[in-house]
Length: 394
Ligand SMILES: [Zn+2]
Image 1: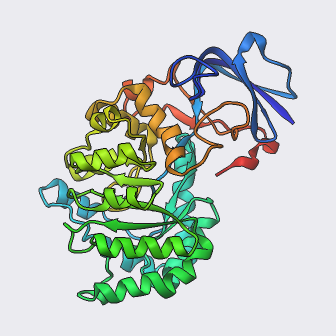
Image 2: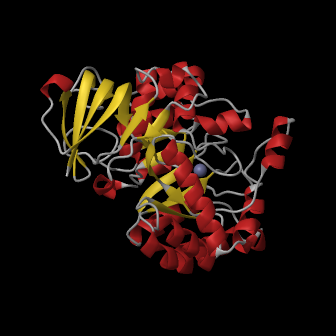
């Protein structure tokens, strides 16, 4: 079955060979979707016939957002911690322990319901691909459970047993790394595509460069691909380690030295910026302009999690990137779609040229610029296609 989507005032394809500029813009456009895949894009007057037709009424259509960094398997609530932080307390990653306790105590049904509600919330705001990490279980059974649940809703599952050192291993980091790289990895690898580590020597709760290297190398030996929480709180070794080991993405990149930027520019690792975290922890933003000037591939993601940033809105992150990191609206949208796809090493999402998955988001606006121009307004939603086209849900 094929569906013609028409009435598109402005189509973002992210392909300069299909349309104008780096966003591959096509005005007065149409898209034909067949069996969950983009079959044709171009000017509406040249569109071929299709079995069904959706008229979006003069709105903009973009590739669905690719949120390449999210922590959605958890229980509990940390609104009080947020309130304390807004009253002047500093964020150092220590509050994760309260989420770990609540998550361990929760039933599968409770965790699944929260996870699905968040994914539904994301989808309603135009996100069509989401990565989901473990990291609030921190036992063999609880980490494997988190990844089993995450794998029900996305192929982009990430084992983050090395999120923080749990309380029962306090002062015994080496023993905990032994657990993470041994029995925990063995139990989690079958349910995960990726392995991640919170590399942050400046936090008493996270891991230094040697521990992070041990985790990543063990993960790779178990067949997982690599991503790193790097340089969030200080200019530590995380970014250079990520590049050296060929990680798909170094995430946060809030504190970078010139050597870190050079390493990213010379490697294949995407710099994933998470400005919602800086917003929600009242911290300085990453130097997006410096990264872009150096030629680094930049992605934007939410880092949706109950502690340091509890937003599920990629549109909000686009607005922050433009206002607070001086990215142009076009750079920010590209980073939130094609950039996220690069950070997940996916060639089938993040763009709308023929052959892409039919992940379309529609904006209640005539242009993508409104995402930053109208911050906080719920403009973006996933375009729901007829039932037989829905096979490509994330
Ligand atoms: Zn994170």
